[in-house]
Image (cartoon, rainbow, N blue to C red; front, side, top):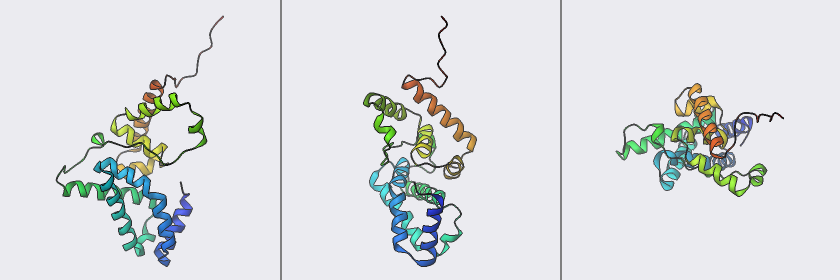
Length: 192
């Protein structure tokens, strides 16, 4: 995840200097997470890629106004959501889409040493638990844990309250913990 100040620097370079290398770096950093996010709306990898491509084309075409954007990461996610929903409306599938109706692909291109230490069995249980989460829990869990977004950013992206995000994450964590046979409580000592 690029630090916010790096994103702001790329944003400045694109807007003020038409810097194509900064644009490419921004594109490469956000492309995969945004494609996964768009896919949760349009349910097609090809269409999700087109949606994200349209978002980035719009970014380049409107690059002069890019300095007016306060949080580019949130802007990209909101733009992706809006383009995906516009696509769905144009396809006359649905005029409004509930978060509870979304399917989310939980694949992530990011791996860390902790994930490599988890046994295959535990990892399989974890992935199944995440897969079994209700759609709203799943999308919020992914945005927080995989994409590294803050609650406030997710609230803006999904147009829900921070309290809802907090509640949904708590539900997700409790279900995952139950599924992998762990407890969120401290183990109690046995009395002799």
